[in-house]
Length: 194
Image (cartoon, rainbow, N blue to C red; front, top):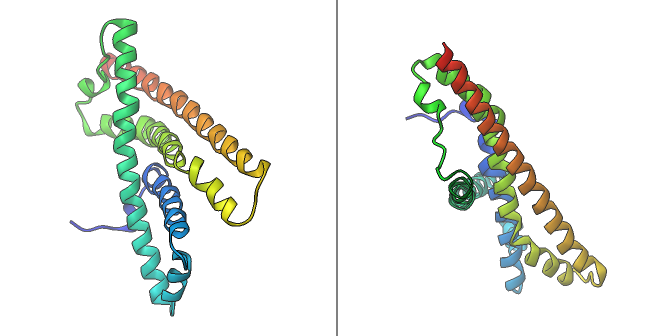
């Protein structure tokens, strides 16, 4: 199997790599705070030429994507379990994605991928995964600010700002998830009708 950058979709980047990048940076700050010299100093010492820089960026991107996939797995476990419990409590049954039952042709699959997956699903994942990746930042970012000598209201303000961003991302994720479900139902009805 061959990998090509042409096949890399924007949706993959925003739903997996970007949240993983945020968490990787937070973890680097955490490691940096626990070392005497600092990890940023060590990384900068390794950049002696352009090929080293490209290698470090490549390793960091792969590490960030792996973290993003772990975040995504946790997000699916947490949020889809909540949706499942909500459906059972509200309707007494869990809705199965009806659109998967009516996709019979490759054109239908392409339409589904265009209308639901590329247009909505990756954004839902991106919002929720980014919110999850920011949770450690509630504790790490204020500690970094303290280490930089910043104190007072900036510390608590940074926590409230991160909490606010997490809340906005989760609300936007829930709205986008609802839009994707509604689009799936409409698409299933259209495909059944013929």
